Length: 374
Image (cartoon, rainbow, N blue to C red; front, side, top):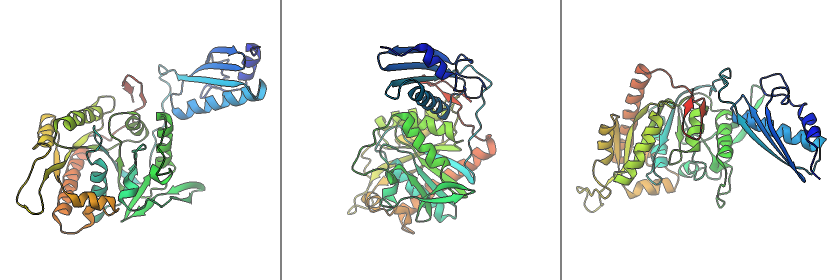
């Protein structure tokens, strides 16, 4: 026998709609109630589009129906937001003490984005800046490996009466990565909402302290994680990493297009070309352009953005990353100089960006079609 809709409606009258001061029933938020045998399905629409508000309502509905109707009921709650409600203006999240947030992105996987991120962080630190890295590649985190802190765990620290995560520090760089919290032998099988929640915790529930730069190592592509980041924090600028071949460049164009989209509007500081050429040790004067020549440089010219520099395909870069000792730590080597040059060029573009453009705003709402409002 199905549950009584009258009893369910009465139970839902005890829940207040977020920001409206009325119950879900009074406000008309409950759009539909379906019962079948031991199953209850509730469709609810609220004005607040934030993930936190949706999750809170879902939990409250499930809790009250289990308490008032049947603890064994199979309750399913579908929460949507009324994006036409213009009165809702979410508070702009802030990360205290962080001056610049730089997203390191790539359209394609395997182009060395994490390698560029880790070595840029080292170069910045050696220049005297305070630097942190947020490893946002939730499905394939690697920054904790590249900094030789795979077995470390962030400690809890009390700040202003609140418990916060203390980022792990290595080579003077503060790091938070999902790799600290997951089993290295298990795949992370999460929907986008779960991954976004984990990222928000690493951003806002952490004590980053004062940083000149927070580098965000993004996963490849243009998906949920990228949108979650630009919805959560005002990203100062983005650096795109690509290899020279056409397939990688085609994906890099998509990465640039995402950040330049009017509704996202994150300035692209420039493009870094990784694996530009190969020089064998026995032929130090030879350059072999295995993946093509000047692909990223030409792309930068085509889309009117800066070419930040190139990194050769060198075995020692891979070896240094594998042992958790970024190659930029090695003083006065050609590779250390190359990463320092890329970093300096990025800083030059950042100075232009901060001089000529207003601060980046967070993206307010992003729908599945890619349309957003701020």
